[in-house]
Amino acid sequence: MYGLKPERYDAGDFNDHPVSLCGKTFHACVSGALYWPAERALIVSDLHLEKGSSFARRGQLLPPYDTKATLLRLAEAIDRWQPETVVALGDSLHDGNGADRIGAEDYDTLRMLQDEREWIWVTGNHDPVISKRLGGHVVPAISVEGITFRHEPSSGRVSHEIGGHYHPAAKVSMHGHTFRRPCFVGNGLRLVMPAFGTFCGGLNVLDEAFEPLFGNDGMAIWLMGQEGLYPIATRLLRED
Image (cartoon, rainbow, N blue to C red; front, side, top):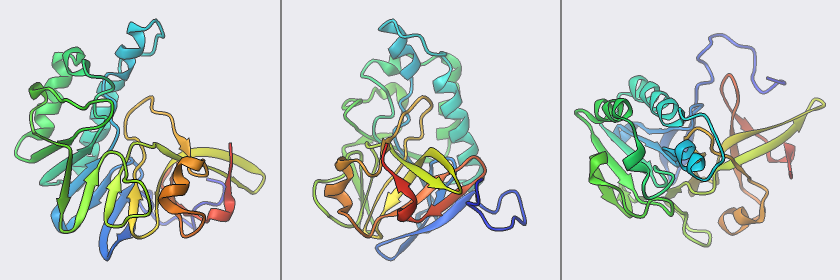
């Protein structure tokens, strides 16, 4: 994809990329998930389940299959990494009534994914209350081995934190082409994850909203391409 990868040896060579956070190693995945090998934990953020049905209720018609598509992609990530724990970092539902609109088949898929593993829902601004129908444990934030997982990153340049909320995306120009894709953004001390859900838009990492989190330097980008996940030099980033 426009020179974003070296010579290929295998189709899966770029499915994930190691990411170091405060001395701990994670694997950022092209799906938008993050895997923590030491804890056998898979982390996803901003599933926004039932976003399509929420928009439909307001008269803006979207295909009503976003929940199914998101859960199937999550199933692929779980099948690959076989985690013992799954952490969903907030805004797992698009609104407070989303759990009531999830269909029986999608509930069956969710229960299958939860079977024999710990499932943790971190609450977000879209889902401050999560229905017991979704199973698992509900927490406002969780800390594991000194790393805090929360939906909305803390204000200021803190460390030992992984969050979501901002749906980071990068606009990149190279070799005469410009494209915009979701991305992971971090600085070795904190990491902000892309939205995992279908129909989720993205906020440009050069937007002023990211400045309090990372400042004007030291920011690293891992861009979700069509064929893999690629580290991108910040000099290639462009504003919208």
